[in-house]
Length: 131
Image (cartoon, rainbow, N blue to C red):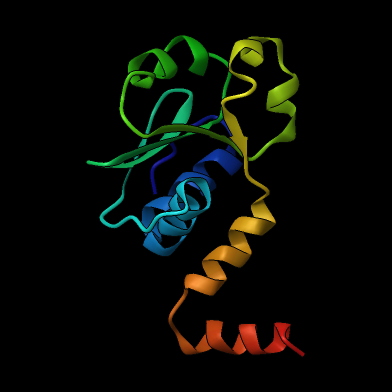
């Protein structure tokens, strides 16, 4: 495993998306309410980008995103900015983008990914949740 970011939790987030298409598809569905396939993941300086030829999701990690990756992607069709941290909307740097950044609750992503999963272990977890 390569460390791309300074913070361990951002690297863990990157590795999770790189290693699990179900989680990528779940996030894409939560944002667009459409099914997406063949999603690729690349680390950027201030974000993690999940994309295919029809969609670009930028998960904001650091200040600087608004001056770099946002400028690079803002004119792309079906571009979405995502934050897993509620603090992003309160930061001065993201003031102008505040209404465009979609906050995703990590537990909501967990449950969406669980519902998308197709294996016995996840089916057993779904059964337990229904008790």
